[in-house]
Length: 326
Length: 294
Image (tube, rainbow over all chains, first blue to last red; front, side, top):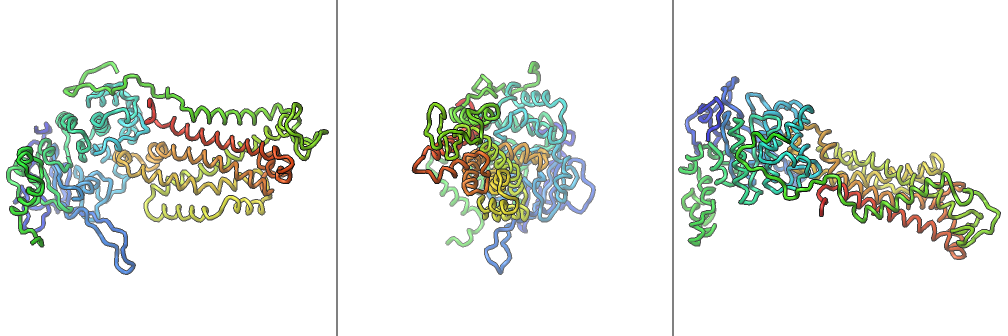
């Protein structure tokens, strides 16, 4: 399970979260990082009180435009070689957080460091190094590959974008074979492939520049159940083989459980709980985590005729006072 | 290709279709018919440089208002000129005007549209508002203004038509580009480190090309008609030169007594408009890899 990087167990402990009072994280007592300038060697990604606000359209001439805080005071540390999961329902800020991590968007406040180097205050043209270190696999295999480009050009894009033109042909073949596709698919267009095959192409593209960090944004959510396991295994395997740090975003807890070492639970832009996977599943601390766990469909319960409403009601009884509902 | 070394665990997957024919796409009927019509017009225009049935633009010692006959296949007009000769020579003007007007509009409009879609905030807004201002001027008004400044000529007419067509290209390109900018492959390209210019060139432009081609074929048709209208008003091609619009204009006074003088250039215009529209539709489909093998 563990990635075979040298950093071993050390980064595993490095979890922390900026929490509102009363919310505990799995790692508990660790003091908040932040003021020290020097990075510990085993840290891949560090977030310090990261916020991202979005301005809504003005609704009134006299009042200022309403602001939506999509990501709220997120503080977390992701160790090198770690498999870090982020779960939460849609609209919880997962994707916004991901865009920030990848340097595709800038936080309103807070600091974001990848491999000890700040990315929160850098313009896109100064982030060339990040594009080699960190790569993405996207959710929708239909929209993540340009329909007008051949597979060869898609996979080679990160190389070409970074000014590498020599030996790309061979590199593409190598990458395609690495993800379980044959070399002769290079001349095809994306529409000729199934969803699972497209995700393989997507993984090949992400691996092209030889990244250290792989960020996967719901990589199997749009796939048929029958091919999910294949793609998950592929990601698992390349993370293992190349000693990558994995950041895996999903709303599907069973998938996260399968892939990740440590899981962060997001609700309304905040990390409400960060804990090692097994601990989180065995003893969820935060009520929101419990309700998420309860929402995982269970065949036995379904056969016993329990509906989603029953489950939600059960959670509400176990959770804190359901405010306002009589 | 040859070495199948380190492909571990996962099975080798090949797509269902085992006959790759990336460029050997079947030509669709629209493209064939449209292409044939366009090619015919181009050939006729070229032919007019080396051969015409009668000397072009010459008043001949024959009867005016002849209906089509063995001597003059499409008859003669009021000034005793051979109509077929004028149609051939007029094809040059028509093609020239259409290509230059659409070229001006596309070369300016498409980059503007992409710029408006890709630049956030005020710059995009500025481009589109400037576009709206231009949209408020019909081609006719622009042509009249230009003609007042520079005198009426074919060149002035086609530049005016081209400028008046810019907003159409900018708008359609922008709307297409906005859609492309939302896709994950553009995000992937950014994450891969592509510059905005690189994204515009490699992703946005190819993906809006279909829209631009269709817009071009429609605009081409409109440009031909606009040129005819301008010539008809005396703002475009001057009297001494042949253009299909000019011929329509001159046929107007004798519409009742010699309707063929209006019908023939009218039919030529209609046919070329049809040809370019079909050609544009066919070209768009042919260039789309998704429509392959269907």
